[in-house]
Image (cartoon, rainbow, N blue to C red; front, side, top):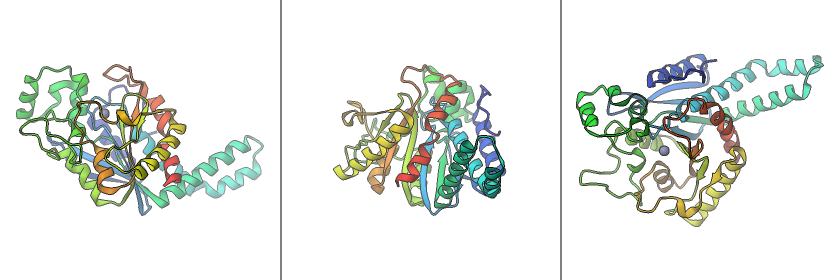
Length: 320
Ligand SMILES: [Zn+2]
């Protein structure tokens, strides 16, 4: 097993080494790509899983303190890659086993069908997986200002009194999820402008580089799904609702009411709004983890989160 949920401490370097490890172990099906650099000079990494010509994009770790999803997204990548490789290797052997064994034939059969579907899914689609868009924010939330290497950024950060385990922002103190140019975006100060941050630019570049059929952005907390987009047409929102309901069946997460898309007084400019408005394709925000889970998030939440969301990709590929 490459991705190990039992290691409580999990730094950015651990995540990068795991992501790279997956691309070596499953090199037939996973490619490791660097899509940008954070302001504190960390690589922003994406794994390309599959060989298909259609693209689905998943991102996580847009907010620093949401430390569960990045490792869970890696584990999900491993899960699908493993199914693919095993089916490729053992597809026929499964048939043989079915004839020979007296043991749990139904289970074997189910496993084989599932692996076959994943195999076909990854030949139709390539999954673009960005487990951690905001590496600096992730490190600040876990290790405080000491994690910042750039002296100018570090001294700026030290002046801000903040409980670091609650840190949502990037290394420059900007909320990336309010940094995307779209209809709802409003400046939050004189020097605030949309797409100012390296992390936002990296994601925007990916949006435009691939013809993405659907985008999911994973956040925490709330165990809920944001699907409604006020800036988009009724037809667009009908499709969003249809997908959201199917994902609700899989995850048991609640759908967020349309009027709660953006909190009152909050500015817009988030990842999914940008994607919807520019490409008119489905884009949803999935909030994992219980609403009341305190920060820093307990590392044991990885297992339940993984179980709740690992089949989302499978379900989604059947819908698009
Ligand atoms: Zn978030």
